[in-house]
Length: 102
Image (tube, rainbow, N blue to C red):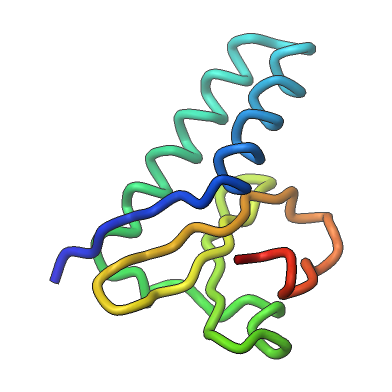
């Protein structure tokens, strides 16, 4: 089964902020990191359950999983045939309050 990948507005804003922050130091690093994150997110269309539950899942009303790409975590949920990408955060960042996810 192929899933539809839906980036929520906050995830899009996270990606833009990551690209801008890294771009201030190195445009090449910003492009490469953005590309890796984008490719990883799009890969969630196939077998999104292959990644572990995120710590945020313990306090959320729905199951939250995370895909780790380099120094970043992609937080998402699977709802029917759709993968909803809620946030893209630095891996060193504290766990996200579930109210900030969706």
